[in-house]
Length: 264
Image 1 (tube, rainbow, N blue to C red):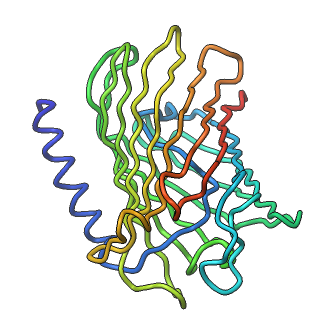
Image 2 (cartoon, rainbow, N blue to C red):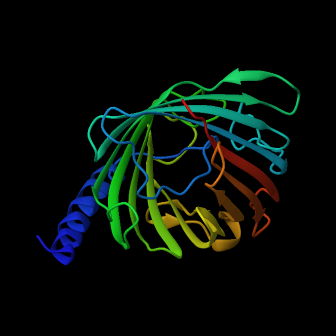
């Protein structure tokens, strides 16, 4: 099957699954993982571990619902374990922890994911890639509105020797929420990165929480963040480092994040 046909089949399937998820309630608030997914995936039998760290240096101080822990001065640390079921299918487990502004530490609750790459370029080659990531979790209600939660993340992009572009139009879903609409939320994100030598990249990552389908918030009320991000792969412990700035009054002003690939 040609690349064009594979893209067409994937897009039709992704749209169908996304619409099925979007037919139900959605909302998620725990920002323990600030990342744009690309075509990276474990080989069959390979075990991986990533450590996600981020902190809100200056952000929202007022709870959005009764009992919520606002992000201001919060620190979040998450271990993400992954295992290659096949060369195109990967399972993952998140164990997120949060330390709030008062110094209290919480275990947010486990999350599980399955990532499928429908197609991707060969190692070192250029080309398009596409996949889907499905995530489910049971997160502390102080951090997310409704339990359990589900997220569907299509992955669409292109890479070559010099550039990486990846788009994640994320649809979320939560159950039994007392404080939000039953409509789903849409949170698109995009990454554009340029190779600066070796396996090192610099670029931007943009994240937007647009609100419920059919009732998107005005731009000034959306949580919009733009990160300057560095991906350093030419070291013993590869990492992503980003400094994020909120683009309006509804967004956290400053966020710093890092992701380390822990060698096993």
